[in-house]
Length: 127
Image (cartoon, rainbow, N blue to C red; front, side, top):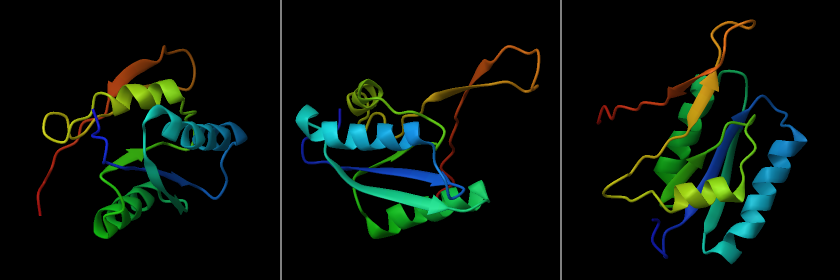
């Protein structure tokens, strides 16, 4: 569980436009979070068309400026709910679970194949 004094930054990348449902969800969660004991202190957005570079810029900025204790990364095609944030909020732990990730369902073929979950896996390469 995130400690009472720890804060969270919500970050996302997009191509210059986001869907209304995404914007509504981020705003709704941000407004409801304080009433649920969650401190969202900042938001970060990087616009562009090279997702790898966008993600690196966002992460570097968050890390270098030390904006908050935690970064919640949301893809701009995801609708975040307060329940989902609450579940993540209550499982992360700086010592035991410093990184928590969602699972995306993707299809390798545009037609015909059922979607399957693929977990995100991270490896810390150090400095």
